[in-house]
Length: 162
View 1 (cartoon, one colour):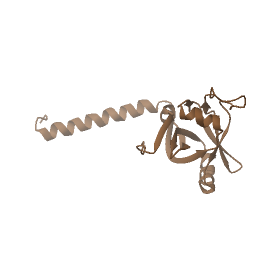
View 2 (tube, rainbow, N blue to C red; view 1 turned 90 degrees about the vertical axis):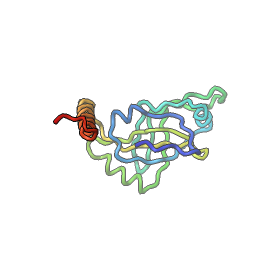
View 3 (cartoon, rainbow, N blue to C red; view 1 turned 180 degrees about the horizontal axis):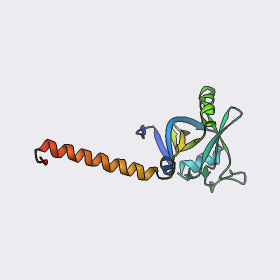
View 4 (tube, one colour; view 1 turned 135 degrees about the vertical axis):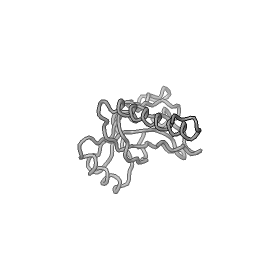
């Protein structure tokens, strides 16, 4: 599910909780419109995607709740840590996802924040919220699969019960 990062990518932050709370069906990479002090803070790895989400408004995608720590060496005109930031996506991608997020249970969730070829990028996933109890079902299926695999292995080794 997670693609290996290429050599030109430097990971800044990852949203692990998003992967546990949502079933990610589709992913997109988009650029971010940032201020200079935000870029410098990101280069120091001072960002948090916890609680962040994206919205589509008037044909544009915006990222809300992304925390980028203030840069200490910035002047008085530094940035606000949790301001809304614009995500740069193609119009076709926005139109495609705008129709899908109107369906019940879908949301746009930032998965990871990274630098790619010197530019700040965000990977956004189209996620459907998981129901409570999905973890129990998932664990039950895993146990059943493990038991079936071990039964097959016993049968192949010739030490199975007859």
